[in-house]
Image (tube, rainbow, N blue to C red; front, side, top):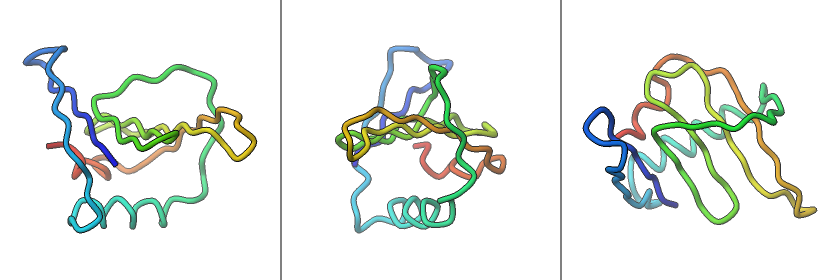
Length: 98
């Protein structure tokens, strides 16, 4: 799984990519967060932009540090695109920011 971080206000073009490897603390925290957040998602047709993109294959999570929402998109088992948003606590996913 990769995490891409756009660093602002330095440069809109500066993207830092790092692997979220299974043997890391960040990966464990991300997995635990996912297990705690399986409900409360709302379907969204809007386009979302964020500073942090966590992605693997057909899955992407979008988040901006300090934001009160997170977005996920993926291709389901029937090959249909899905996108959902969820309200989160302030700073809940800030550990993804490097």
